[in-house]
Amino acid sequence: MGLFSFLDKEIAIDLGTANTIIIHNDKVVVDEPSIVAIDKTTNKVIAVGKRAMQMHGKTHENIKTIRPLRDGVIADFQAAEYMIREMIKMAGIRRSIFTSSLRMVISIPSGITEVEERAVRDSAEQAGAREVRLIHEPMAAAIGTGIDVLEPNGNMIIDIGGGTSEIAVIALGGIVCNKSIKSAGDELNSDIENHLRKVHNIHIGERTAELIKINVGSALPTLENPPDDYPVRGRDLLSGTPKQIYISYTEISHCLDKTIAKIEQAVVNALEITPPELAADLYNTGIYIAGGGALLRGLDKRIEIRTKLKVNIVEDPLKAVARGTGIALKNFDKFTFLIK
Image (spheres, rainbow, N blue to C red):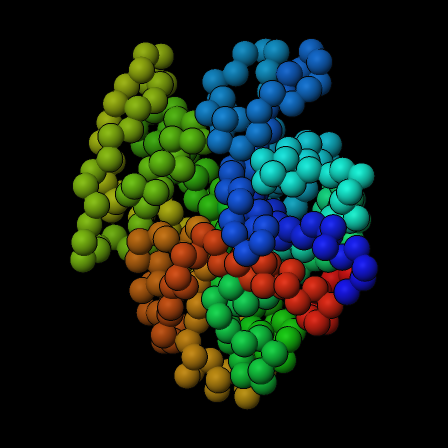
């Protein structure tokens, strides 16, 4: 530790397609939707996070809302930089002449390209970071789950986020085999929007689709503790007037079936390329599911039926990647798998 190391600021960022979480001093200081509202006339940021999400789908021509990340990677570089900068301010971390440096560990999808990786790093540096390390999301999720990733035991982790589903087998501090697919929370929302448009002639927005998924989303057509039917309000495509209908979890399970089947198949594909000694370990440890997708009713049972392996939903799955990124931050120089 250097003479002025007490002036260093350290933060861990789970930069997600749907939500961004920032950890500082082992505490979650920011947990906000990954969205920015910008004034088109002045090109200034009006709102970030929850406030910008409230504007999403309700803006006039002078305001636009941007989700800077798509499919787990930065799609709008400038908006991502704005968002990271504003969220660091929300965390109460302000750069000053007394601040020596700002260190960051940021989680990224395992299937990311070098160009996309560079975009994340550049955005963080433009937002004020002096030193940036990156960690793959499945590795961060495994650490956040409490798995000792440095041991020679195999563990499979599935991280279903907003833009990507990451499936990885981890051992000896590295990802032995992995699958990263762009079938995740956003695609499930899109399935719900399309289903209501085709079957009920009702047009809904992205936010309403997300609420339907949270309230009556299901991976199985029959559940032991089924949720009540959910009222959905949108625009009737035939009359053009507002309309309300009720949706059941069974109907939603059918419309989500194809996307969930893709996730299932990716899990099976990852198991097929797993070395036999690690496959033997997985028979004992089972599979861990993290991310927002882990909260989808019946998903653990469905994957259990397909793989014949025990499936565990991790504690507080939404923050598993962020927790692991925070632990990686504390072991900044010890963990060799952090990408420099």
